[in-house]
Structures are given as structure tokens and as C-alpha cells.
Image 1 (cartoon, helix red, strand yellow):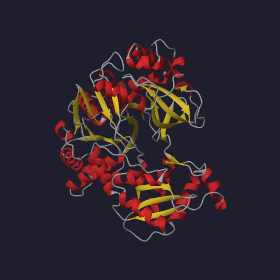
Image 2 (cartoon, helix red, strand yellow; image 1 turned 30 degrees about the vertical axis):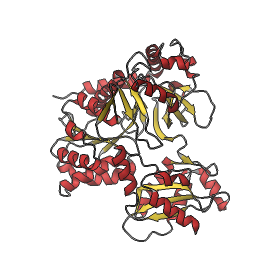
Image 3 (cartoon, helix red, strand yellow; image 1 turned 45 degrees about the vertical axis):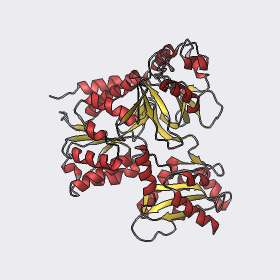
Image 4 (spheres, one colour; image 1 turned 60 degrees about the horizontal axis):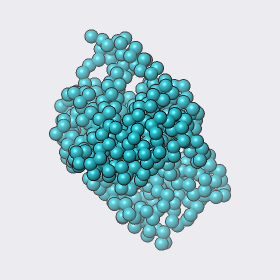
Length: 497
């Protein structure tokens, strides 16, 4: 039987609940403070547990270095170091910006994943193409679900911790199976996942776009190159996180053989922050005020006061600072969000703090670089996703773009094409480039196909999950990154000429 109009009514009610941000956030803070009252962490921060929302916002944001000793304390046997609820798991980060971090989780914080999946099922059903829903499987493309145990605490990638929650909330309606999800070798797990998925009624895929593309390539190979919609006629949506979807859309839809709807999610090791729940929003997401406390600082005002969710302004960019029910308080995760609509509150992930190259106030961001590469890849045989940008060691007034080329005709004036494309979307860059006033034309080094294979392979095999760092404000640091040694050698050779 049809679930309409019940799903539409339920989805509408849920959206209204998300709109009550002030009420929800104030209630959540009371819960967080009550749970951490008298804990070693609260004592170190000077918190009584009875602070008002306004008083709590005055607490200085903290980096991971502050919380690391408390994580070690948990591993030494004090499971209540963060609060009244014991720490039962640590999500381990990929270590893309240094040593991997351990992010604390309680049973309650992990349960938020199950609740999120049930919410997503509601919207997936309500927005589905069929009036009568048909049973289908959700395919999860992620890092290994393998976890190790230390001092009674599970430690692993958040995807592994989330897999257990997601598969539990969907019972037998997820793939791959637990034994396949446990495989630690990336290539072996992808092959086994594709083999298993080709026998299931896949209706949605979840994952980082690059991971999804890799899985679909393997599935296509196993299917003899036939369009995958022939195996998965119910596949209509891809839920993605980590990176933009559009640069990968053509590749992904090419394997599937038809267009799909993409829905953005904002997830990290700390939890789930936002999701695209409204039709026609093109990646803009609703923040989830019941999942964690969020405070914001205007990135254009470095020392400005923190703002609550209900005081954000449309068109502004903010650094996100979070407090979780597992005990992280005023934690700087390093992400920047942009508010695209205030009522209802809609945001996009705009990048990372410090994740830009700023030679002369041009502030070249990752989003801008990805937009430029998407344009260039449509015109030239180059990869849209395999590139690095850093200051040019041969000239301090220009950027150096290192781009992996593909098969095809010789590339003409790619530096000029990049220069023009960036000037169209970055007014500051355009002004600084006018008549070479401050910045010079970017320099481009085209790398052979597969030049980044070692970087990606080593990242996946050593860490199980991988984040491709495209922007490097210091060219010399590239030499210390595993898999980029040959590329750094190429930069050094060019610099000596």
C-alpha cells in the first residue's frame, strides 16, 4: 500500500522541528552541561554546569591539542574523563593534516547515527519517484568497518562505527554485508562490495564521490561494461559527503547509464551536522540543531564574538565550532560554512580554516580551485580532481598548478584558461591580475597520467580512508607527504631552471 500522505505529513513536521533552532539548541546545551558537570574536563575548563547559553558562548574555542590528554586519560582507564556518560568508542581521523585524532563517542552520540538514518529514510521515501515505495538496499561505500579495542574502548574510522549503527537501523537493507565491510584492504573490499552489490536491489548509494566512482568502475567492469541501471533499476539517489558531487557527476552517471539525484550530507568524525532535505536546493543543507551544539565566528572578523545558530546572516561565511553530547566543548573542527538562506536556515560547506592560498589577499579557496578545474576539464584532457596548487618557488607573485593530464590532443594555453576562469569567480584575483599589477599569470605543470596514483594508494592503504589535499600554502611541505616525493622532485627541478 502507499505510504502517502503520511510520509509527506511526517516530513513536513520534521522540517518544522528543524526550524525551532533556538529552542532546540538551548535545550541541548542544558543536557550537555548537566552531563559534563563535575567531570575532569569541566573542572579544567572552569565550568560549573549551570552556565547560560550566552555565558557558554564566551568560553574560548579549543583545538584538539587541548582534548588529547583527556583522550589518553580514557585509554588509561578513566572512561568518565569527559562526563557522566562513559566514552565507549573513539573515531579515528584520516590524519590528512597531521597525526590522526581520536574523537570521543558515547552510546548516545553513536545512537544519533541510527536516528539520522531513520530520518533520512523518511525523506528518501517522501521524495521518492514512486507513489508505492518499493523495497531496495542502501549501498554504503566507505572505509573499513574494522575496529580495534583498547582499554575497553572501540577505536576505528567513523565509517566503521557508523556502519554498525546504519546497518542496525536498516537491518538487512544495507550492503555490503558485515564480513565484506570488515575487509581492511581497500581494493579487495571494493571488489567484494561490487560483486555483492550486483546481486542486490540497490536503490541508493552513500559515500564520498571519489569512492563512489571507484566502486561503480569496479561494478561496471564486473558487469561487462553494461550500464549499471540494468542491474539496479531502482537506483535513483546518491547521498554524498566530503567533497562536491558535480565534478564527478558525468563519470558516475556514465557508469550508471542515466541521471541520478544527488543529496548532500555534512558528516565528519565528530558527527553529522547537516543534510539536504529539501527538493531543488542544489546541495544546500539544513543544519541539524538536535545533533550537536553549534557556535559560529565570522571569518572576516577574526576576533569577533561567537554567534548562535539563530543569529547567522545570509551570504556570510563562518567558522564552525561544536560541542558534542560526548564531551567535546567549543571544539574547533576547522570547517567553514556559508549561509545561503536564513529562513529556513540553509548552508553549504565553504572550505577549511587556512585551506586557501593567499599571496596578496586573493584568498584562492578550495571551492574556487575545484570550480576552475571542473571548467578546464570540460575543455582539455586533464583530470578534474587530480591537481595540487601551491605558491610558485620560481616566482612569489604567482600560483603553481600541478595537474594530471589525460589522453588526448596537446593542451594549448592552459595557464591562460585557468587565469581567466579564476578571474571570473574571484574578483580580488581579477583586480590583482589586472596588467600584472600584483600577481602574475599562474604557471602550470602537466603531469603524466597516474602521477598521483602513489599518493592516493598509499593514503588508502595506510589509513583506510583518504582526503586529497589540493591546496598547499607552503610548497616545501609537499616533500614530506608520502606518495608526493616524485612530484616534489619535479617542482624542485623546475625551480632550479
